[in-house]
Image 1 (cartoon, helix red, strand yellow):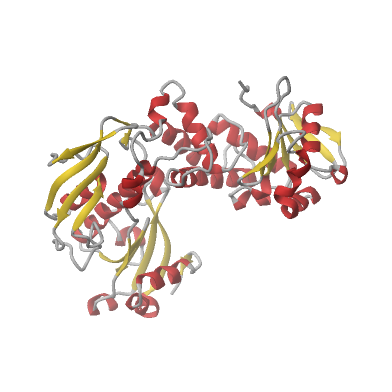
Image 2 (cartoon, rainbow, N blue to C red):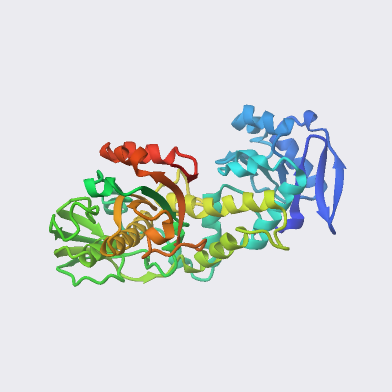
Length: 447
């Protein structure tokens, strides 16, 4: 069994040297990377120098070469070193008895663009060290796989919580909830209001994960079940197509009157005053707050990298780590619904969990929309974790008074203030065009 990596196992590879930090100072081993033939030579370099991970500095000639060659860089080493290249430009050495494995991290090819700016070895090492301190593991892979590895570490004493589905995944693939994506034209009254405010929620998906009930491995079919918003699963229901918020808010099921819906969707429809008749269910036999400890770890990392501190004083590294932390929860959620090509500890195929996160995020947004409308706020658009409201007030926080504005997870921030006279006509177009146009605007006050 491999020993977990520590920051002391990491070295930075430039075009001329292998650099490692010891007692606050660089230890340098001269290297001419122009002479390195393939991935096997990099693995041998790590083995000889006694480093388990080599991080290739962005902007180097070796970085450019790996971009060009990609998978071909491992070709000559597949037999000698069992070399392979994983998603995100990470090169792995297959396990060989009696030898330490070496990982080569092509940092410029990670699925986080901010890491491409870490051309200075000080910045790159600081980013790796910060992530190690915050997440208690060394970055060795893309954000989604790292998120799964963190989950497995957290639940190492309760592996059943992360077991694959014992039943078919098909029901959850066939009945996936969708994020809110909606807009409506402004009324004549709203056109007379001077401001359009475009706001969004901080880390919306992460915000719903704490305490979210997720199923174990087994589900059961139930006829005419009594609804319980704490039980994960699918509920076959008939929902009235009209309700008290028609025309001013999106429908909780996008207008679908009958079908299989996730627990959070049914709960939201009932909260919004729709009549719901449940005929049968496909419900979890047991459930757990599987993501809560994971959420706590990512939450702490999210806040720690938001502002400079004595622990995280390198701004370039801090911002790169902040971007990586955000990518962890987004990519891991996406991995739940993508079947892996082969079994792996960095894969976790649970489409039911993906559905639960998306449905919970949508449900929370719908509750916020209701609070705004009940307070007399004119909501004219909503998409995933973003809202547009029209108001007489120039200050977004005042205009959206029922919502809490702060840097905290699940709270709101203002992105644009637009002039209704200039941008109001935009909302007469299709929803897809509305949101495409809004998202192309630079952040700040316009008009």
